[in-house]
Structure formats: structure tokens, C-alpha cells
Amino acid sequence: MTPRLEINLDALSHNTRQLVTRLAPLGIALTAVTKVTLGDPVIAQRLLDAGATALGDSRIDNIRRLRDQGINAPCVLLRSPAPSQVDDTVRYADISLNTEPEILMQLSRAAVAQGRQHKVILMAELGDLREGIMATDLCEVAAICRNLANLELIGIGTNLACFGGVRPALNNMDELSWLAREVEASLGCQLQIISGGNSANFDWLTAEARSDIDPARQCQLNRVNNLRLGEAIYLGCETLHRTPLDGLRQDAFTLVAEVIESKTKPSVPKGDIGLDAFGKIPVFESRGDIQRSILDLGRQDIPPDGLTPDADGLEILGASSDHLILNSQHQPLNVGDEVRFQLDYAALLMAMTSPFVSKVYV
Image (cartoon, rainbow, N blue to C red; front, side):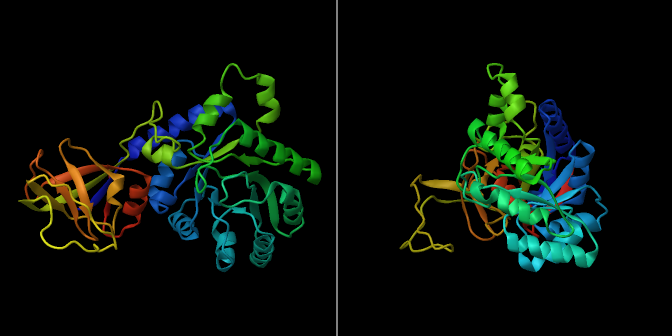
């Protein structure tokens, strides 16, 4: 069946174990992010068996899917709950990331009504300008959370290198640790979790582990004890440079599509060029006649620029909603041939989400 996404469970287990082993000496626990897998319970169980201490997902529907399939590990809602999802957040997630006092109050009411305790991590704004409480307001919001019934403030965190592309570095990680001490001093409590970010944090980890940094400084300043990792597990790379990480595998996911047409055709369309199906004016390079192969995959399933053919000599020319067009002049293809691709994170996200791409465990 094509198109299909082949999921190598052994590669995922390997990457998770390697990351857990790498983080443990630094006192950092791994929350495995499942959002790119649509909350797949088979994958989630592999990540837990390999040492992940919790699962994180930005969609409450994915967490519900994990619960319905018998996953009982701690689950973290990684996106601030919408007001309409507060009840489900308390019902299915053990922990949620939060920034708004109004949402905290609604979570408290829902937790009381359900007779549950709900844990909260407050997100601090450290420059990336996605979600986060300004540093000057964090202690005030923490006090509000601490005084709400059936809520337990267990930590603070931040998110970087996502919307604004701000790199995790010694300065902003030190600021997060400083904010943790400020909150603890103002409330007279000990925070359990200081969540420093995501798969973009490996440059910081390398710097933090350097021998020329005073060990006393690391002990005093670095309070980060949790990372929320997705891309490092699934693609075996960090996200600032998309560089493969030593010891990790990059073959956990392979997208396979089938050739449905293969013909010699001109390289440039004939006629007046207007807007294509996606509102763009396409540009073509004249190369004479070439072999053009069409695969049963399109933009409804994946962004074509997120794919890399496994075979040399194949070039992706573009895609419509349902067709992926290749230049196969230097790697002739026949109808029925299967073509294999590696994916970047965006392509993996869309392929996992598409109902038209079969998922196969290998």
C-alpha cells in the first residue's frame, strides 16, 4: 500500500536510550514529545520503555488517544489549554504548561469539579516571543497559581528557537535558573521541574559540559533538569543547524510512494503561464526533454521541499495536491516502482497527520 510511512521502532528506542544516557549525568530527565506522531501509542510505549520519564503533546486529543490505549505514564499538555479544553486537560493530562491567570482559575474550577489534582508548569518569556510570562510578572502569577484549589505548581519552563529562533544559550538558561530561585524564594517552596526547552538545546548542553566552565558555577546556576525532546528522537538531529547528533540514527522514518506515470516530456510547459493550484507563478528551467515520473503523493500529504529521495539521480520538481513530480532522467523509473524518501520534521508531521498515508511499523 502506498503512500506509506515506515516506522523503525528499534531506531526510536535506540535514539531515546542514547539521549537518556547522555542527559542523565547532567541531572536532566527526558520528556518525549509525541505530537509529531499524532499521539501514536505504539511509539509512545517504545519511548517510555527506553527511559523517557514522561510524554508531552500539544494536542489534548492526542493525550486522550494515549490514555484510551492504556498509556498511564505522566502526560504533559505542552500548549496552554484553550478555555474550551480545560475540562479535558484536567481529565487526561497530569501536567499542563500555562501562562494566563484566567486559564489557571478555570483549571482550578475544573479540577475541583472532577475531584482531581492538576499540576502546573509556568512558562517564562525569555525572548523567543511565543508563549511565556514576562520575568517581572512570574512571581505574581506563581503566587496566584499556588493559592488556587486543586492546582499544584511544580515548576517553570521556557521555549526557545521556535517562533523567534532565539538560541538556547548560557545566558538565557542561567536566567531561567535565576527565575526558578526567585519563585522559590517568593513562595517559600522548592520547584520540582525546571524545563529548559527542546531539541535546540544541544549547543547549550555542549557548552554547559565544557571543562573550562567552573563546576561551582554549573552547580550554583544551572537548575535545568528537564528537556522536552521530539526531533532529536525522531530524526536524530538537533534543530538549530539540523545537524545529526553523534550516536543517533536518522533512519527512524521512511516515506514510500509509488510511480503512477513515467514518460518523456518537455521540461518547460507549453502555453501562457498563470497561477498554479496554490496561487504561485511557477518558474521552469529549460533542459530539453526529460523523463518525468509522477508519484501518488501530494501537498495534501507532505510539503515536497521536506523530502529527500534515497536514490541518487532523482530530483523533485514540485507537487500538486495529489501528485509529486520527479525528474528521473538519470534514474529511470517505471510505473509501479516504489521511491523512498527521508523526511524533515515538517514533512514527518504532515505525513503522520495525513489519513492517506499508511503507517507501518518495521
